[in-house]
Length: 225
Image 1 (tube, rainbow, N blue to C red):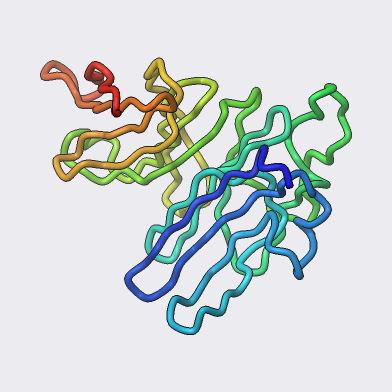
Image 2 (image 1 turned 135 degrees about the vertical axis):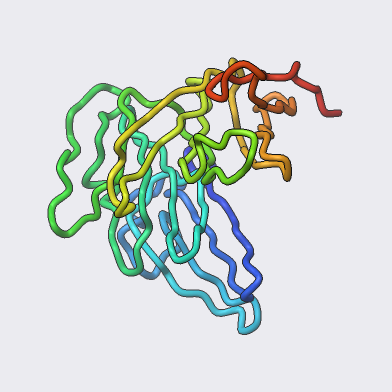
């Protein structure tokens, strides 16, 4: 057992469903096997305790959100190619055959364009940003960003703001908010401010300035004991 590159998220819904994502645990061949839960997005029924596989072929999915009927996931690529995916029932997301990155020895062994067998990411970051959690912004603190996808990063220490097109299938804009600390998690406070969990135990609150809605103020990190 090796827990490296094996992030995952759990979302519990009010309809007695739990959604759970898993990485490949360095057993990449298992991501394509339907009798393994490695490299999958899974739906669990809390009443019956049964589960079903939603999607396969994931490497290291560290972010997961459900917005209405839409499931979005973020996933670490191998060396480059961090992905944002729309997760669809029964679809295969290509790992370990297809990826927009390289091996850590910089070998170009992965298929770039996913063929019809595999689902393309809706967006990918190369070089890698160290992708982590995501959310869809809804709030009054940053009204210009309502319905934008916010993606946090570890290596880049930045929040990325992504705008979907009217059909919700393509990214038409990507912006950046530099935080200066590795970001593990993000949530939205009731007043619309962003609350971030730093990787070193800090809690960071992000709010706008009075002068311009597009500017932000980051509070001093609060160390949690």
